[in-house]
Image (cartoon, rainbow, N blue to C red; front, side):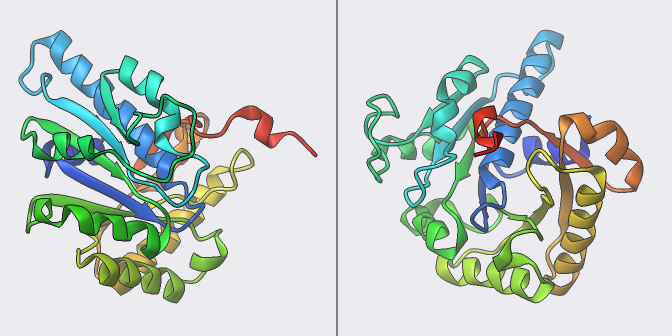
Length: 246
């Protein structure tokens, strides 16, 4: 079992995910939700304590209408993950940049582990200020996804300043970094390695632990030998037609 996944399953139940626009934070968030659901299902099948914990994803991205976790609501809920988003629960096909008050339900539910998928950068993370009462010390994780192949985070200094901007905007402390060096479907194990090394350097400078490196499932066998923990992610958020030549 992944050490990282066990940390996410057993630590603070509120896990907020942020990062630069295009970092892959929503892909990571959705992949983590599916992984937690699979873990819970295995525990239930084995009759092991912990398998009954409820799981939820709250889509808080009201900035960018593309690649939002609410778009995978049916698959997530089929896996046992409740999805919260806009007042219509993502069902009316609108692009209303609003969120439902029902999002407070999983935050109030002590038996629910909830992933908060925020918008990009400090402006997207500011929505967490609405839920400040839930983020007392030790009650949350705030993960920042780091992708060195994005213009706004392509140097360590830029990446650290990006993290500090999120902390200033939210009044929260980023508790862990997740490496996600990728070039979409052209990603190789080399990009995964470079992403991890960049994130580890950023972590050292920022004084925040680097937790794992995201890696497409097809690359996991190769990346596992590179000396750091790999977290498999799917390509749930990117439909294949987006990769066709124009």
